[in-house]
Length: 202
Image (tube, rainbow, N blue to C red; front, side):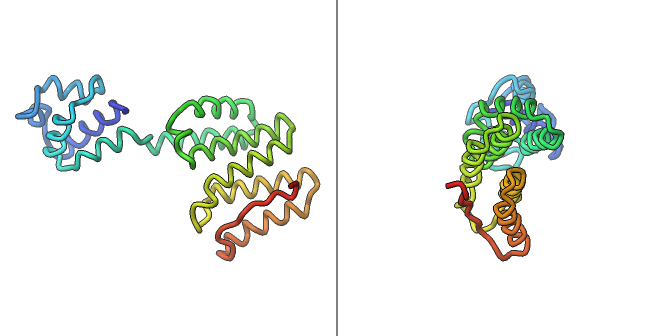
């Protein structure tokens, strides 16, 4: 549970509704306690959090959700960082970021975020370790983490298909490369909603 996120949100919402810390604390707890909660020093009891939510006009579950869900801007920052390193060919640095995030439960407990890490790990294996077989196997697994879940194809799934295509091209398998590029083109034209990758190496 991220106490600081909850505290910041309470402070932000308190100001929006025009309450002072004293106002929010009235009939709930002390002003000093509200101050510590907003600073992220402590986490309020369930009862206190419920009473605070009533005064702020929100469902108490809102605070539980923001306390256990990673902030969207954090995830976007990681994506941006990995993209910058990937496009810059800084694969060693990219892999260090991947290793760090793999230890973060926000990533390894979420399939879509784990897919982001595995995709970049596969790129590292191909570009640095020069291991096409392992790279293709990991990338196939990475793609299949989400491809079976829905009919629509995500932007990342298309990027993974493009990665397959570029690798095949680099390995002089132009027919295989063309096949993947055509899948992406079909997706863009809404003709191919749920591509399944089958490795030509199998």
